[in-house]
Length: 194
Image (cartoon, rainbow, N blue to C red; front, side, top):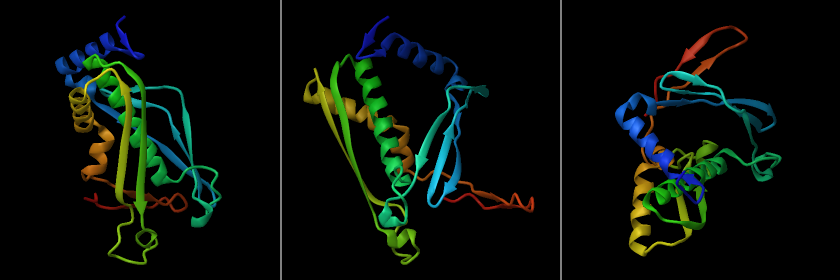
């Protein structure tokens, strides 16, 4: 087994080959189920996913959500926009580790500082001129690696052009919403938002 900083480079190469030869094996459907618990708190369960149409059962994870006291929460967990930053940091960490290994770059340390600015006037419906979500997101990657500045620039480019979370944040993703009244059994489907 050829491993670079814990990433099995041989297995990574086999995965790339397999998906190149049979693109269907690279198709995944992930899912999450969020349930409101109390106040502004919720818990999201993440368990199985589909790969190439086959259901894969794995370990179940629970992610809690809440709001700061300043936004009427109890601060028992991060809020959704903080979890988005965490998801982006996680995605970039995976991308840097995998791509560095594929490029033969040995990482000693890797960390990300992420920040986002939100104006609650959008979320609270006070102003239609203010976005409900982040106005800006910044990310700084700190890397200790045996690589030149040119190699790090190439690594950054590879990661940022292939990061699913960067793609989801910087490009509109069609979103379909549906509301189901469990009390009455009725169904209300909204058109996809673009």
